[in-house]
Length: 282
Length: 164
Image (cartoon, helix red, strand yellow):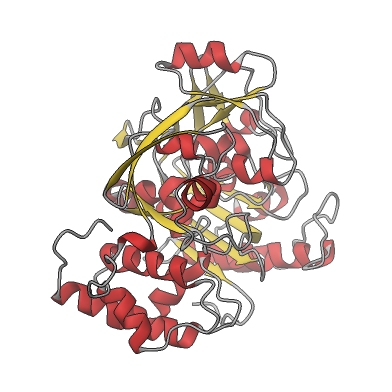
């Protein structure tokens, strides 16, 4: 890793000034950024450590859950208010990375990193979360902008995200057999106005996206069998030594049906599958 | 170059480091605490797990400078030389929960964290919690047994002056 200047500003305003300098990057929990720097994806001239400046609340406000950008995955996963009102999101976050990563990784870092197999982006898109920054409020559909990119401007800091409560929701992911991130993950929800939402992560090279064909057929009735015969287009699907595009397209359909079934269950939440999992729906 | 102060295994340390110095490099090369290992260097294997402010974290994916003012415990801090082993270390020895030993310090540090966080420790839970700790000898069977036994021992025998 190339050396860089480490800065620890005392306020978000000072952080903004530091982050506007040439070659500066913002550092929160660092669980994506530091690894990516070692892998040669980034060579920042300076890192601006904002981890001590970010709110960490997890609260119910106006039929939505507000989560501070500095809340760690471990804090979010065990939040009682979230487990009660949006269990699928709490359980999704409880399966990000591993326990040590969850002690350090944050909501703000995870959404700003927008990894193509990230779990949070799928939940944000399906639940129509709003990302709040130091300057504006951004709808998830406008925030995520392709592979590891967002519409954040230089110096703009994510401060929190708001997840409207859904009537029901669930998340099912199938793990990459080696690195254990989502080879494909599907978040389904029936949002407050009754509209079905389906978001997929891990499948496409450019990150999480809404699966509109699936949403269309589910709008008649939110039942797994409605998805029979619906197939994800293989366009822009990720291909690697673990799965080709055809496999990922098939997996998306299987996981979407499992997720819709799970959302209809009293125990709606998240389900993690891997090679060797039982093939019978739970 | 910037400087950093933290408590490591109960001792206040102060040093000048580079911005890019990782916590694991600072522990191993700066302080000579080579019990913490580096396996993958990319946040997957868990050989580098230490406790920062009482929580298991991967020291290969943290800057030393991010630990300003923090309390860090490494495998060396679990039991003083000549003193009885920490109950989790004793359980690993008793159950022969190691083969080559490379992953062991990270496994023990994670195991203590698991035992502190969770009351009910059955085998599937322990295996799920070990998602970020890889034993390349694939010796998980005895590691899982040791963690169950070590967690029971920790509940029955809280240690005086335990930094971990």
